[in-house]
Image (cartoon, rainbow, N blue to C red; front, side):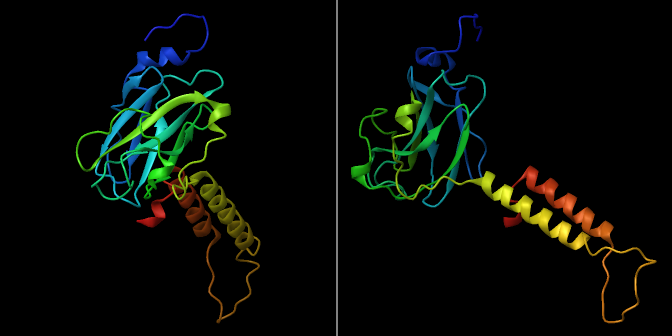
Length: 219
């Protein structure tokens, strides 16, 4: 899509980027980027078969930023008779995205009917297990005042990764502080010695794997 130099896109401009503004990833599945525009400021993703307790990552594709001062509220709708994520077919707020926070991970939980919005994106998708994720472009001031459904608990992988990195550095520095050369070693039959190069290799490998996949240790 070509653009002139008049400035950032406004909300109405978003309708020109059907299917390329947001995407999602349900654990164990391929990435979905087939969003459609329900309205100039609202986008929908059909996500079949989400189960309670699963995590879903919702993210901007980076092709079009939010207009200045705007962000996107992320909603979930799950029709009655499905796997029990929502108690009705209303739309339930999970959280929000912004240019500064272009992705978030949410846990799918059962949502009470009274906490939903019935007609935000129109009627629910057909099928007993056809969930939908909606993105509504709204002012950041408004988004900051909204309260997500209890229990959706946005996963904070950044904080976990930071903690892990600090723990690795602390352990490595502590262990390395006891390093001695072969000339400095005192023979002790009751002690086992570990080459510092082995510790260094483990440290670098663990850091590299964490950077590639922060949850690799679960497998």
